[in-house]
Length: 347
Image: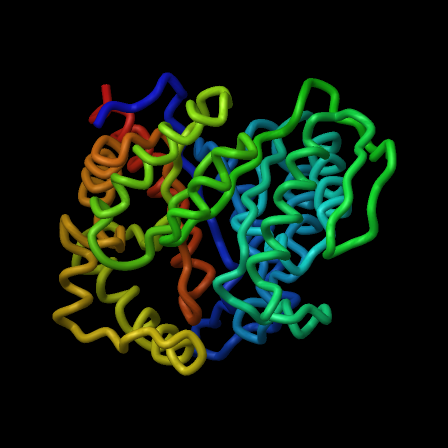
């Protein structure tokens, strides 16, 4: 599969996992958030293209207002693009999401992006009073409305999930057209088609198993864009990982934290508990985890971007319990060694 005519973008995503101190004690939510700001600033300094924050609402992931944190990062950076990874649109108001990210776009000088998702983690639904029985309808209607808001014109819209709009001007206006917007997809062909129908870019969230199985999604997306008369849009990949000086060190740092996090979330998400063998498969060349030395991670990114016809890769760095120092080292290696090597390999 060949890549489209879009530039290669190499970013970092975080869910703001609670970090631990040198004594393996969890830091406060406030300190974790302050650390994320420092991580975003470093990402800008070492040449990372994008820094994203995923929305969560639990004790383990206290980044419930990522756009506020991104605004703090925007004030201390000059070039890096900033956005959500992901915003749970189903339990939010599309108008308010648009306003928050168009405001971030203004503050950052045109560097905002948004990745929209239905919510694989469903904590926000009861928190904000939404019924999971409306899961599909909520996202379908709100994605449609968000697509209308991006046009930058007065909006007229009606549906079942929120009050109608009649020739409504929504501010602030963007300066130079709509900011980039993506639909995050974890395995649903219907979501791929929805992204194409409304003219969004496609972000493939690949967190387990062989990435190659997502190749048909890229092909479906491009066919659907053409069918709906939409302009070409890029395909991106979001996957977890950790970069350290050597493969052994990266795996040693990541494995116990990964095991504990998956064991914890499996209670509500139904994930299989990983074994050393399954972990070895995932960090290998055909798995979904990008854990290793800069060369190992770069080789894997370049191979999967090519195989999937994608031009964007966001490494979801961090895992609950990893110290801030290890995350900063990960970011520095990713920016100074992984990114240049990926570009070299793709060239």
